Image 1 (cartoon, one colour):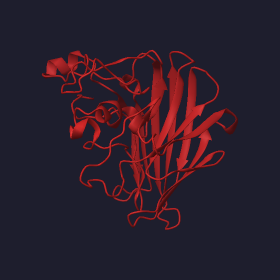
Image 2 (cartoon, one colour):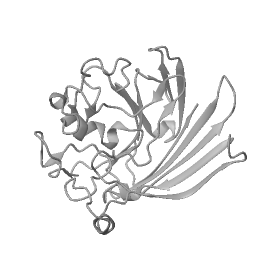
Image 3 (spheres, helix red, strand yellow):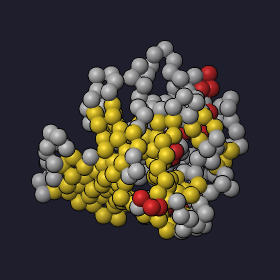
Image 4 (cartoon, one colour):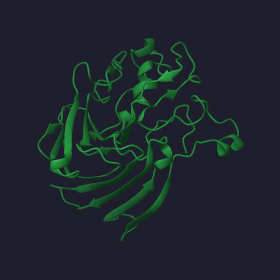
Length: 275
């Protein structure tokens, strides 16, 4: 469920930390955006809380609108930016006030379909989770499912692997689909491989993501970020600098990877292996 307010629209998202933050949630609550008014700031409403700032999935319908008339404060607007992400539950960003209100409206965003871990329950070799997050999105999708398998290799050189499999069926084949992976430092991109490192603040982490689906002949891998595009939302950068040195490690992030199929079809699959 998503109850609006301080919750993010990040159903199905993941984060990875190993010897430093690698796959991150991007953005920052408090900062210069909106004169330091974190909750009501343009950065918070249009980027930080939204799906585009998370390691999740976008399905971009250029005509979709996100009503936010219930979002108060000095920077109140009727609509928020179209980030291609998950819908804003409620009517215009109004949170449910009673249990009946919650159950009678559209605050449900998904369900767990399957799970498992073992063989040891304390230190499992594998962990599996499959979810249906179709309800987190608008009618621009017919189906969105995400599955995770985490493998613990107990190896110093390659300690673990996270495998993420996604199925997306859009209601229109022209709606572009995006698989997102956020990082602090600029990622290195090859034909089907993405390398993220964390070298600052005393960290020494490294993540290698191999793109298996879409195949190399049907995928576009793009790095988005850097000066002027740190918090980019389809043509607009929602800048938010720290106040009083509150983010000395720069963990609000500056970069993201977007993986998209080059062909326009209703049904697409994504398979990524991170280690």
